[in-house]
Length: 260
Image (tube, rainbow, N blue to C red):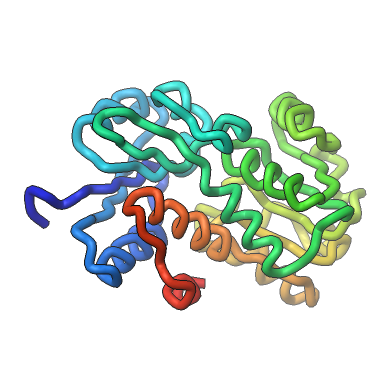
């Protein structure tokens, strides 16, 4: 590092390793004078972090639970972030903070790499910032989206926004469909149990989890012979788009596949 090194940070309540490894190895791969650092930021610290970003860093990746709240502190949102109502990428252009959402592209790429959801029933669990992006991707792919969340008013608001069906949480065991998606943060803690049991999984052809590194839900789905989409696939593709936003350069496909 030197005075010209461009610093990218990530902010999360529980920082992970994948983004750190992906971005930093990408900088080395392309010979770029960048560094990527993770910061633990609690919800109460978010507003104060914005001035730190504005005055010091080239960009900021945004993880749970900040994706929705950070938008109010930014100067501009791109079309996708504005429509989704969640930001996972912030670029600093000479003190002007611009918000993007690369989770939509990551989710869409991950889903269509494994299956076709056009015209098929998709049940998504969750209604937070990640769920907004994933649900938006499902709609782009033509899926018939249904949403369930423990806090029903939040699920209703997102269902209305995405023109999706609303499923009461207590009724998720009655739903059958093509794809089941966990878009909550359940699984981020190593002590978390899978968000649903084998009975619910059995009613779907495929299971997707946005959480990394946990694979408990995915492993249960594999045992039943289901098509699975681990969180790493979505995470890698959204990170690749972030990389392009931060640096103006694209990483080769071979580099991405090393992180699946």
